[in-house]
Image (tube, rainbow, N blue to C red; front, side):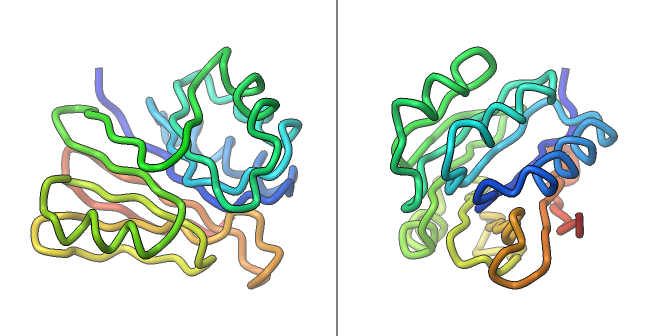
Length: 163
């Protein structure tokens, strides 16, 4: 039981970057992967099947093909409208795509970890007792930097990893 949590967002159909993230998460023995939205197309979401662990995801503002994304993720995970709230390893998680709801959820103090994307800027910070994580843009199209994050539920620490 247990294990690392992989976090990615804003993959925007960059299959090379998604495959690098999958390799990173497999190498880190991730037992759960969180996607904070903006897959864009179902064919990119299907790449996450290679993870051999569950995926929990939210739709982003660029995810127009929601039925296709839901079908693509169904065999190994779930995707839904934000916020996605769940428990893992005794920790309370909230996942959204946009930054404004992430700030609100972090300020409430009801969650141990709040994950978001959208800004394409990596961030790991504490807001009171809540860890706030934005893995940056995994796709790398906007900033030229593809990143993801690894979260250790035992130490409550997250690290941004270049892909």
